[in-house]
Length: 97
Image (cartoon, rainbow, N blue to C red; front, side):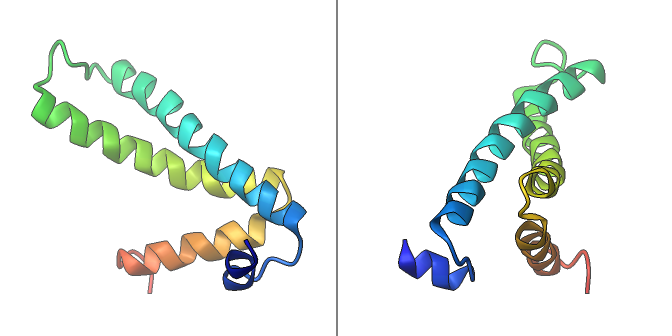
């Protein structure tokens, strides 16, 4: 834990616990919201081949994951940590410079 705390520049175990909690609820929330959005758009396994549906599901979940990560980070007082992480990820994908 100490190695992770130093890598992420986290000073207390309480902050580290909050960060882990945010990661856990973000993943669940992104899937929970992504699936109904696809269904609302009329994209289900009944009318779209699985080879198209699952990449679209993963993409929508990824987009909501990024949004929820920053939003939950803000709610739980760790906005700066998650915003820096988000910027680093977007740079790796070449979305921002």
